Amino acid sequence: MTLDTTYIRGSMAAILSVLQHSSCPQNIFFHFVCSSNASLLRAAISNSFPYLKFHLYHFDNATVSGLISTSIRSALDCPLNYARSYLANLLPLCVRRVVYLDSDLILVDDIAKLAATPLGQTAVLAAPQYCNANFTAYFTQTFWSNPSLSLTFANREPCYFNTGVMVIDLDRWRHGDYTRKIEELGSLPPFLLVFAGNIATVDHRWNQHGLGGDNFRGLCRDLHPGPVSLLHWSGKGKPWVRLDANRPCPLDALWAPYDLLLTPFSLDS
Image 1 (cartoon, rainbow, N blue to C red):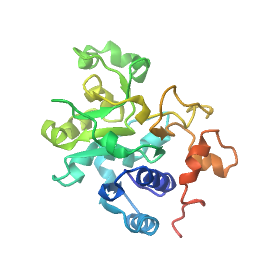
Image 2 (cartoon, helix red, strand yellow):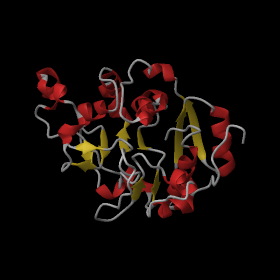
Image 3 (cartoon, rainbow, N blue to C red):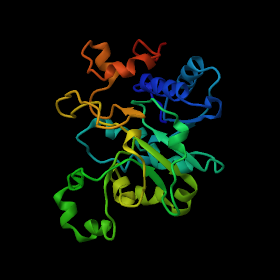
Image 4 (cartoon, one colour):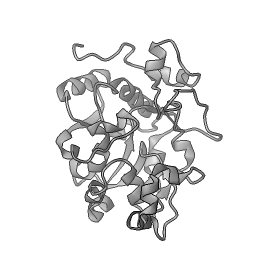
């Protein structure tokens, strides 16, 4: 996971949910990536989870300063949001597989099940795929009219997948030099460009995403049909913000029991 002062409240809830639903919490090791306030964030984690096994890695924002493109969502313009592309470089070589998680989610199932997702003989990562989504909408008409770009998906059947929940084989990532391939493309859609149509499938129960609501109007959303192992408040609205404002969506009540930081996080705390 990444850590910053803006999302630390969500991170704390995510950590607690992982531990509470794990059959062997003592076997879980957290790798946190941050770009600033490392000592403060380390203290916050240690104070809340004194027995947690974790390591904090520094991510240099300058690494991606020239790669970030304009987005309709300012959250995607945060340099730390691109740290997921550099996990293979940041983490030790002995770490061969990781589960990447965003900070705005909670698990209600054992993360060991997700971590054990089979990746087959060649897949670098696994994630829930959404093949009924309008995949073309994620790229501009200029992209699709440029043969050198649109042919990226030749011989592939691409489906949309959310990059907030991924199982990543770091050995295969390093061997395939995927950090460089993503750097050549820039912003978050390159995950789709590089991997769509060539990832291992994870059941949708492991990323019930979009609970943050409509990005333009912030409307509340319901769960997708089917079982639930992970709830993800991707989108504009975050449950802690809506709860503090006394304007929660119904599903925010499922996040509230994991809220350890009942007051907004402060650099002075």
